[in-house]
Length: 304
Image (cartoon, rainbow, N blue to C red; front, side, top):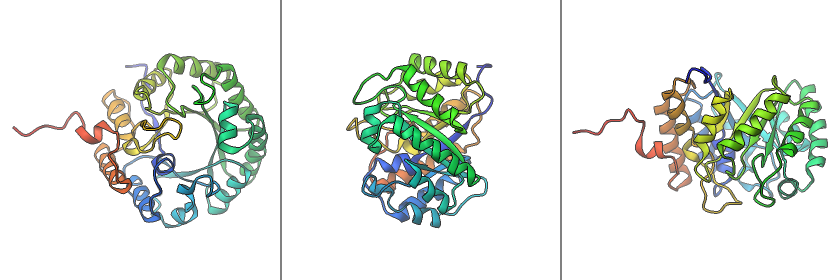
């Protein structure tokens, strides 16, 4: 375990990626969840996304949510956008950390934002300049990095070319998204290894789903490769519209529980995160898939 990072950074994506895949919840519930997460010790929260309300009605109240949350000075809040217009809305709302998503799969990108991957990358080049001019930063998320629900396997070279174009256009960091949980440890090793070989100094974040039960195995593989920045979602909140009935994101409390026991610090208070997962479960009104939420940490004792 001595080769693992001493510490990792976590971005909590439940309020955005998690709730985006749930039945719409009231604005009050979103504010309550973000406020609970803001006091768990997690350093970054993806709070909202600025998308067209007809496309993602779950995020139609993004401006109102952002205005009403109790912001913690020790937390960095970010917003996801699909295009230039979304980026301008995020900047106008006061965000300085912007994430923009593009699919390595052309079919998925057309389904998601109604344009080709190449067209999105052209738009992202302008977006990066726009955000930088405003003093902000841009992370480019390459989704379907390990496979597409429409096309199947996406060639690693295509994923790398998509990320490399974003880097060349000035992206401040890259995230690889396992959109429908198609990644396995061997595939993670190849993509991360090849990206690191070509871009050793570019900040890299990984976003895994647990759709097929390989989420934490993929995290461990990435840790062994030196990756120290991950997304996770409280309670395993979320799902996948392309894999009906499947679980979604890796649960934050499960990731924290595993890596902390391995000597990798996260800064997260596990008990507080489990409490936040209980809050998330109550707010969405369904049983969430997190096993740590059900069983508690390994240190929990059963009374004799």
